[in-house]
Length: 351
Image (cartoon, helix red, strand yellow):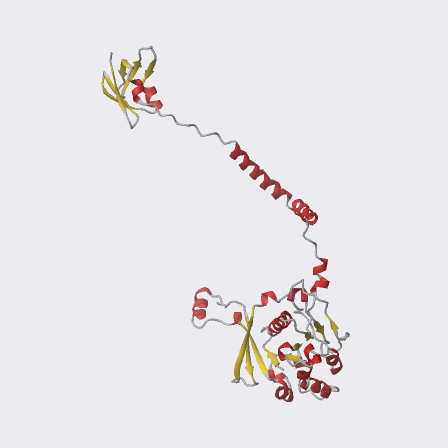
């Protein structure tokens, strides 16, 4: 049997770390009993049918602890396997396990039950603000392991953190993670046997962070229903009918955005399907104009020669039109003109 006393300052992550151990036990299909208000649908999968979690009163009596039965079902069959032990997790033990209340009525029977918890198949976790809050006899008898919980975002990097704060005026924080250092014994210099770590973001919704523990809790021990029976079987099935319902709901909610996006998409499709076809470029060889002769020319001041050409059929063309077609036109003299297309060239002369 393992007994853990989980300690830490206010907001240090004691409950988060403890709930993470509850999740580990449930994932291993082991029994859990606790006085913390859990929300199982945030703690395990919604499909879970067989997770066994019992809620005990805020300050349980020996009658309540007897009601939770065996933590390890293998014990009833005569099999000894402590790796299948259940977890009994009790929060705010400092308010009812201290030296002032040590001699309360029923305390002796409660101590006897805890002493024999190993034979009932239970691992126990006591959550307190500080180890000194527990009565000395309880520390000596039960505190096998002590877990010191810390939050990394409350720490800073030596030298670098000071330099960053000097420059920016703000504190350089580490990423938020919860760390539990497990010591074997009650002394600070006791041997470290394990380290627990978890990111709390996935567990904030898994339990009631505002729970107040009272002495007049008006319920007895009861079991939580697994998430399958409270959430999963009432889920909306992902079939065609419900998909269409969801589509209508979201279309109505975002109809303006949907219409705008649809109009943009239709415009792009229209441009794509109505784009003009590419015009094939036909190259004309200068040799096609060998039959042309220079009929006349003129030259304006500071302007190149302009020629008028004619072939044997009487078809006329000017040097300006040849340039528009794409030819390079070069005037050699008043009676000689060279045209080319970059690959071939021809000379056109007077009659």
